[in-house]
Length: 146
View 1 (cartoon, one colour):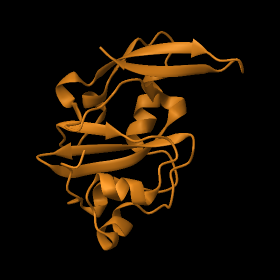
View 2 (cartoon, rainbow, N blue to C red):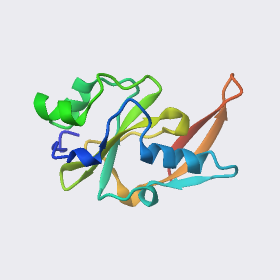
View 3 (cartoon, helix red, strand yellow):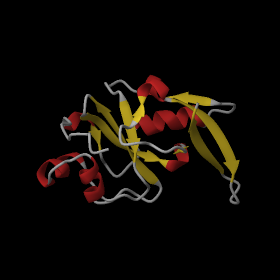
């Protein structure tokens, strides 16, 4: 993951304390009755060749280390101190540079995979939608690589 360099224009960062656009698009797909898969590459409009998913509740400092961003640059990219416990960061990269970062709501799907240092490739960004009924009568949606 250390391969990402924080060369992100502020227009590609959705680091408010709310769910990002791509996460909302994922949610629209996976919450559609009968949905069996989601193709992440079809939901994005910016360039990327790989992506990463953080852990829930990760801090700004942890993300800054991940993207090799210094304190000044990081403060402009990551505008919140800590991701909410029900969100993760989605980080997209192209040619070793960060192209987009946003918060992803776990209610819109939990990525169920291990991502290596090189990131998860765009060429394999179709995910199977798996639902598990939790004890609260609420579906937990998992996104598994196809």
